[in-house]
Length: 477
Image (tube, rainbow, N blue to C red; front, side):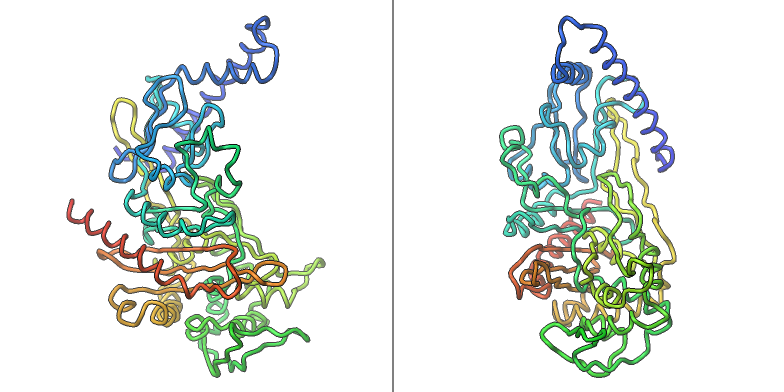
């Protein structure tokens, strides 16, 4: 039976309410029912945790092909068993850990109520989850990103552009959730987060967002003559490498990633702060979004002075992704890219495919949902994709881009006190098996001179793994 989103939300609210009542009862018992045995807060918390654990066998987590990810084979523990250390590390940052000692993170935390309880209330055991993630694709993504094991690390996302279904999601440094109790204290802070949900300076992938403001202002065909620099007062804005491109419109501005073009267009009175802010709202960047694997926080934009007037320098910088306050998450960029692929309709990302009750009955946990429709028209998406095709031909080669319907945008963001480090970005649409997918990569805090344009080989490896996965699933029916 298919459960629609609203019914599922109500069910989770009911279960959550029951859990709150149960927890309240345990707290009351711990304070007043056994005062001789319990003295400190830590002792009370330990008893409550023990009481909860002994009532339930925590549900298991599976990938989309029902390959086991995590299980708790014994009643009375929230600790997990994994099939291998390699897989545990690949799943770590997104599935998260579950531990008697350190509670939960990731999907384990976001779906904790479902994993500890049955929706029908007739079983003490928890429900299991079938995720949308694909094991082989997840392992490939982890292997490709493992080289970026420094603290700020990297993140990759593979998503169905039409449905929002997440097929793979990895953050580095990789977190070994198999040994979480022994390694927790030594683990770096950056290991505990799904970086897909965290904002960073985006660089030129921001131009996909700013392109909408230019389109809505009716200026996509307007010709700009690029001399290689654009002045805001006495402050110059230049293109990467000091390049100049002559007479260009929006398509060339996107395809050749022309900073000066986007700075100039954003300062047009028809756009400025109002136009950028309206576009950010249309792309759902200004709201927190509750997802089934965490909360996507609103992106950060600052295009105004303290008195509310337009800050021309910030507007120009923000338009090409280098604003001082601009912070956008990789998942936001993936969603924007999916919107362009999906004729202007933004899918809501999801990772929980099914909830499996303890008696083995399967129920659909999520149906694809459009988060925002009509952000762009199909014609406007076509114009942006024309620009992205120029980028894709430079990055992947003309034949590969045409054969696989690849449309890409790279980004190189200057970070650090004097821009001596860079964030590398790549987001692209690619077709395989008749379906459009989005692959988004962000590599953080790299040496100066590292550009998004150097991520083509990694992008190709991930696309090839995706195509193989689609082929396997198609053959299996």
